[in-house]
Image 1: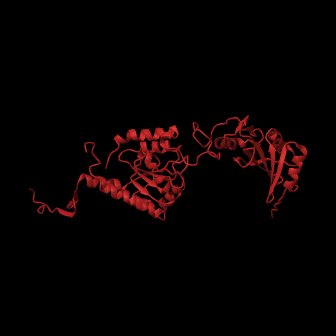
Image 2: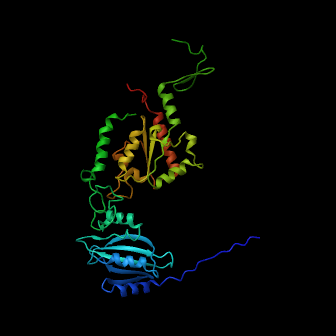
Image 3: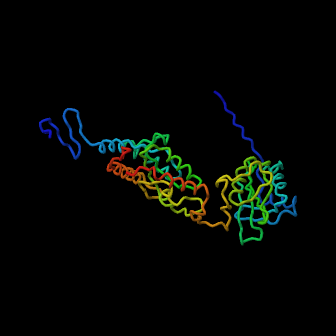
Length: 193
Length: 172
């Protein structure tokens, strides 16, 4: 009778996110602005200058080993905070199963931050979407183009000062105006029933 | 004047006469419209959640096949397009191109609130009703419409085709 041996590799338990936040504070004391804790979800709010170095450290440190970027997005705090944008990185460690959220402040006058594609390859399209929706430029991104909106679209739709309602047809996106124009042009060839 | 009674011609309904054993006399309108409405092939094209309901209408329970409605993989071999879902401005040129490839005579069904009017999405990216760039024949309301509603819409389109006059001649 065959015996199947099951081996489970047990990794050490993850670190409490509050302790991870403390660690970041120790290593980069002048970069951490605040640590927010909401229902055991810990966010570390940092300055954008050293964001790449901090994230690189979180990825490379064998005890932290944040090998998975859950999400990358941005928040527009127009008229709510002094610094308008925050780029949010949701980090997770597959090995230790602990997670933390990093929020990097990005000012309105020059909305740019270093790309994290060299650390996590999967950040590529996330950063493109973030650029598309908020207009935050990611320095060092391999292919920073719009991903959802047409490439010649003007404005960044998820900014709070972007009008929700679309423009009148005269001021609409040129590609859509072209469709309307062509459909009117072809109307005379339609067969009326 | 030919005496039809002597030839055994029987009128079964308006404009349809049968001469036994196997000759049917009818009008062009009637026979062509009958042919069209009995094999109305929509092009396989879905945009959003309405497409899921459209698939449900095509599947076994509701079974569009019994009306001769079979989804066709290419617009060039289709008779109509069901615009099922939200049309975004970026997608509008594609929808128009699909429509342009359908050979005449062609029909458009706008399925769901979004395709009819833009629905809840009165936003920067959504077309406020696909009738702005397509000649829509039947509007099917609902969010999404039940398969029965889509069936009703398709039957309405069949009725429209049945009543068409001389849509088969370039000299009209």
